[in-house]
Length: 371
Image (cartoon, rainbow, N blue to C red; front, side, top):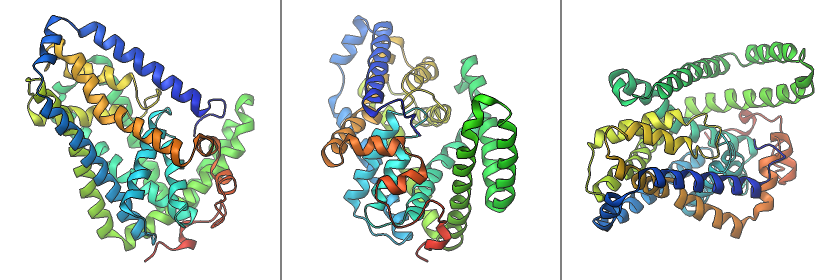
């Protein structure tokens, strides 16, 4: 969750400052006479195609959310689903490690009558479908095409993230199979953490939140995997299509700049790049995304095109939709609601947002996943 000291408005300012500084630095380092000549010769039709691909990606992602919600027993319109995805993109982009989008998506789903346990489950399943594709594809790509990462820092970062993700996935699988034992392990870890006085005041709340999450995670996913296998398969295929449309934007922009790079290479680089962004500490990965893109495409794209390519790539994949999502949130919800959602713990969320359907300790199995 977002730290309480950081308001939404302050996070928006930080995001804008980092974005302007990064893009300004990128332009200053790469722009030159050849850059302006390339801009003049750019084929505008490919920019419209990039816009279309971005819209297609969001549309498919919206369809995934709608299908999963329907499987959980809640009917939401496609347009409401698309609005929720845009809200998610805005909140995720202005918060470190993209943690701000989930509470907002849960809130959106509960506003359509979905109990909190189900809304949490739907949000979790959608995230797992997308994340698992990247988490599986990226290591395989690097194993067979290690030359994609030539920067030593990025290589080490990829290795550490891969190890960390492996440990997380292993724990999640263990949690799914042995939720009670997992809670015992968490209790022992929290007892050990209490030995450190600065952290002792936070361990009880942390343990309570983790236990609630484990209950929801194990109960919800067990039911989803047991009764909704076709939904998960369809969601996986559609999520892969959404990622493909999004990743093709980079290829289309390069075509517009009259310097096409093999499409397979463009796709593989982005799988690896987004894998590296999993734990980016900056809002929406800003700075890390541009720097990583620069490092990974430097050997394939001339320097005078690299800056304008990265600026256009980020605009059509992130910035444009953040602007639209922010405008929609301001108009329909207001920043006050977003402020409450981003600063509340899960149990506070159920009361502050008038989510009376379930208490914070209700597991998803009590709500039934609309079998």
